[in-house]
Length: 88
Image 1 (cartoon, rainbow, N blue to C red):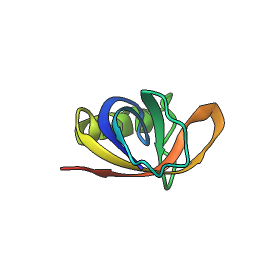
Image 2: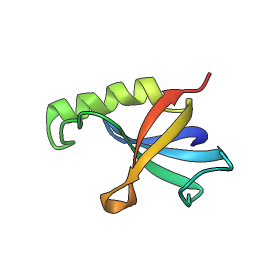
Image 3: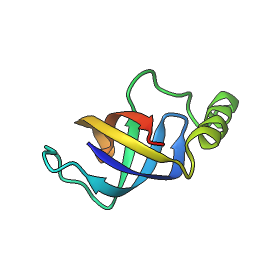
Image 4: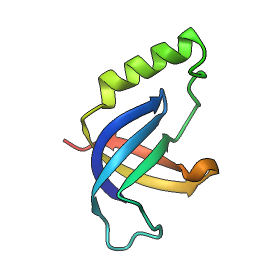
């Protein structure tokens, strides 16, 4: 588990998180910034209007916010599939 701030929204369900604190018992090695795919259904592709709308909505919800990230797996491109919640 780690905590940080969402510094970029890559697509509707993929966030870049600047890590500020890591739980000592974590099973993963983390970089200072991690790309996190929110656990659950995938977002529409960015090349579609629906994908662009999903990204705008995700930016409204997540960008600049403090989050708690519970990684489940590291997958393609090194992304972390994770449960993500606002930490306020």
